[in-house]
Length: 89
Image 1 (spheres, rainbow, N blue to C red):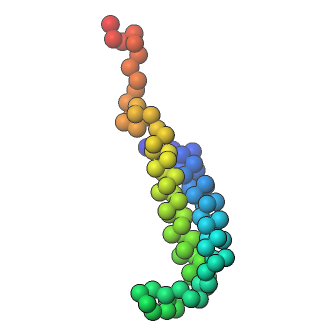
Image 2 (cartoon, rainbow, N blue to C red):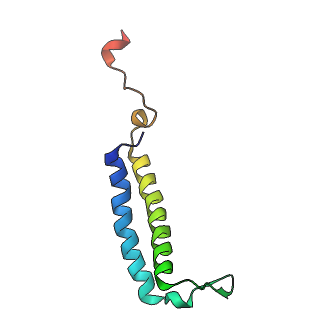
Image 3 (tube, rainbow, N blue to C red):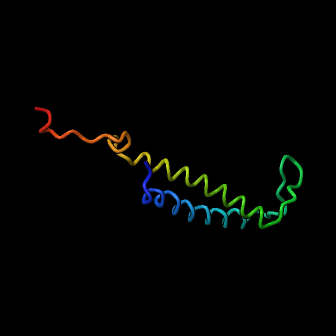
């Protein structure tokens, strides 16, 4: 189960990286020149910025979630309690 703390570990860095990525992409590309399948998209600049940011944020959240998942111990991941050596006797 993902706790609030882990959710913040996932969402906050992803938000920051998505914001930087958005700035870098649109420093080079003009949203008015966007085309989908060879035709002009016909979206406003604000719509392009918003949709692109949300796509970047979701992708970065997936990356951060995988990092959190890989950092979990096997016991935590499987919700098992580590056995105490005194219980083995």
